[in-house]
Amino acid sequence: MHSHLLWLGLFADSFGFESMFMQFWRIREKILNINESTTGNRVIVSVNAIGGVRRDLNPEQQRWILSELSEVEKMIKTLEAPLFEDYTVKKRTVGKGILSAEKAMELGTVGPTLRGSGIAQDMRSLGYAAFAELDFSPVTQPNGDCWSRCKVRFLESLQSIDLIRQAVTRLPNGEISAKFKGRPDGEIVSRVEQPRGEVFYYIKAKGDKYLDRLRIRTPTFANIPALLTMLPGMYLSDVPVIVLSIDPCISCTER
Image 1 (tube, rainbow, N blue to C red):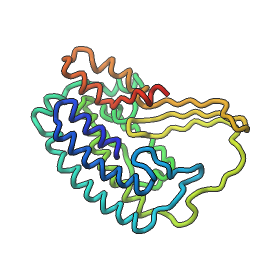
Image 2 (spheres, rainbow, N blue to C red; image 1 turned 135 degrees about the vertical axis):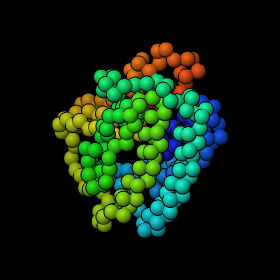
Image 3 (spheres, one colour; image 1 turned 90 degrees about the vertical axis):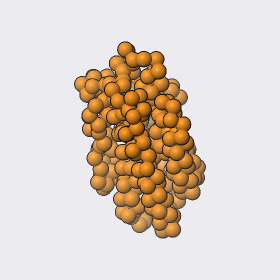
Image 4 (cartoon, rainbow, N blue to C red; image 1 turned 180 degrees about the vertical axis):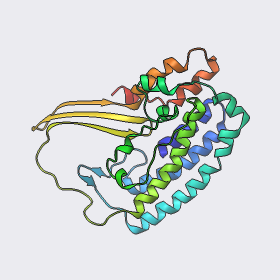
């Protein structure tokens, strides 16, 4: 959620809507406060451990999270009309940087960039972690332009609230971390959905304390080729909007 809200603010900034940029980041602060109170940090969390988490959410924290999310939901919805119905915003986003469904598949795009072209592919549909127990379906938009990619991430922000509500009401009692021993031996591929799309991990180990191989493919790496289809023929003023529509993170890609 914090990634989507951060991006929505930056996207608004790309076409000069400074007040909307500030509003999205104001909402994001509530999410960062929840992160800090429950995971140990605002962005880079420290509560995760191999086999589970370091501490549990107590009932008071769960009630507080649900209360804060109700407020966040109201705040996000107040920005829906100005973001998607404003004449100026539509002029800067509708029909800009079009990526057809066929081209999106051919170029191997992922995440909101792919779903904004109408392809309902989301790694969470694989049912990893708790997603098999949650009511979930991918958010898509059909037109493949900047407006559609923005709409996907906006709706996914609201969908995230619904998923969190489901998860909190279904939290089981019992141990919060599985016991483990020994060192990994073998290889594994993991495909997980990040805010920008699918991240691909390949790990190979041979039973000692050093990994034999580790490879990571981030969603930005998968989405950059799509810019070669989106950008030709556009005005220079459209370039920041189109580039930001894939939410590029070059530092992630350089891994």
